[in-house]
Length: 361
Image (cartoon, rainbow, N blue to C red; front, side, top):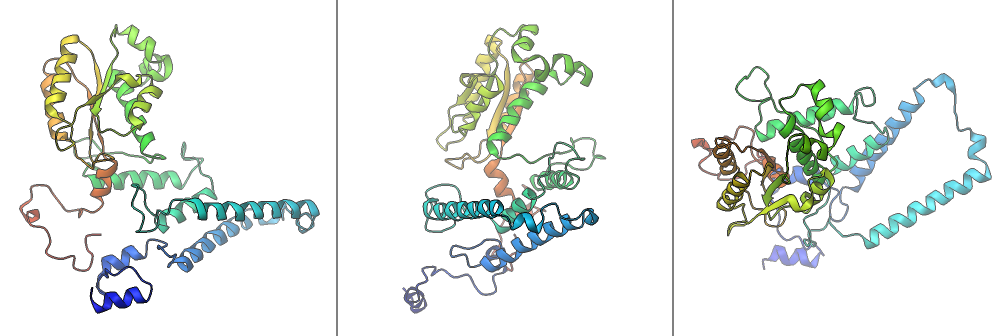
């Protein structure tokens, strides 16, 4: 152990691996988190105060001539004081319990789960938005946040390489929105596979009569003489939300078929081929096949290209299905790839020799 490291230990600092002073990547990342010892507490606090002050000003400036609804006299009453004190005590107690009994995601010492500390921008944005309680079901109920969600969806599409130019006719235009979590995103993909995998050729007014949302799954299957349960296939390394999503969507969790993985924990294309061949022979429909781009436990990336090739093979024989990429981990990885990166481009053959000034972030 070097002298500098010994000095760090003597000073009570266990973080002996230090980034160079001129490493802008490290400096930038350090500015995004509260820190294991709340080193950025004052910055976080000042932003919280700025949010609260903006909220106060917004309320004061909305029909200021109305005057206060909660008067000083009400605030001075015994009942008001009793209940504000009760709330204050509850907040302090809950904060105390959480601080003592929560899992310390924020510390580099803890690595037992895949969760980690949340960034200050995400926490501030979440807190700020809650104060205004927008409802993103319509532009009238969320005039700003819906626009922000649309833009965020476009940014994610751009990051993942989807086409955003409507003038490009040989590729669909990418679109996306924000869900409350990965499990709901998986559930949405199941619903889309059911709804649009069957009814995509119908016009909108026809779908009102025959869509899943209107008539339900059972009547729709009977109308099309579907006498075998339709399957939904993905690797057995799947996240636990997939069988639950199958149950919620009415497919049935037992019809969410697990595909055995290969030795590298990826979807085994040979096993998928066998399952699809069996479905073809039994004339049993398949809603979708999912390629997991970064499995939860193993971080394995399923061969998406191979899944698409198998779909083309079976489409020629009369069996088609939707393909969904569960890229919860793959999406995170994409955030670290420069925008101009193109797979197969000779200029990307060699990795960068050094991080430079953090241009990769």
